[in-house]
Image 1 (cartoon, chains in turn orange, brown, green):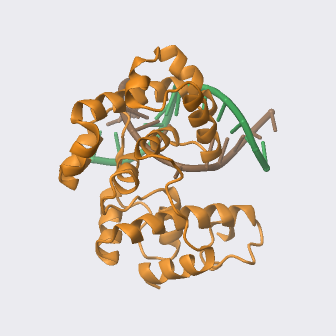
Image 2 (tube, rainbow, N blue to C red):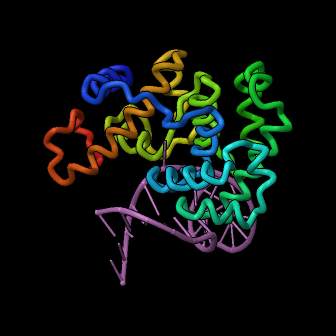
Length: 212
DNA sequence: TACCAGGAGAAAA
DNA sequence: TTTTCTCATGGT
């Protein structure tokens, strides 16, 4: 099986996911930081709280007292760390010129800038690049490693950049496919978990995480 | 009660 | 360079 065959199978089974679940690019960026090692349902609560305090802009986040910001982020866990990371990101975002100035920066250069922000690692940076800046980078997460290593399409303990390069080479440069593919992988992984232990309806039963 | 969820950075080995 | 530890809530 190839990467594109898996993609077609997932798309046929689950349909288009219309990711990322956010109203604006900046909200997407906030979500990407808050979802680090955290279930999305908890992130949604934190975003609602930020919104209720009119704190869903980079300026508002920087102006909010750190202790209050952390309090609003509590539902997403790691609130003290995430409050500081969110601030770091907003400071960079404003300093770098926000949209549309950032849209003019080359993808590799933009990725380097993102990775230089304390609190932004490869997965978070690539999610922001793909879903907020619409750049052709593939997001490698734990689900991707698990599913595709079982398909023997990649080596589970390979480095992040190696895996990303594999996907990007095999799928060619297509933002729409990268966007949909990652969403489908997450959708499948969660769907498979819900159907544990049988997972009889799983469209990829042979590689379903819950059957391994 | 214990474990897990879409990580990242710092410290230790 | 690689591994381990820490951060922390809510759902199951």
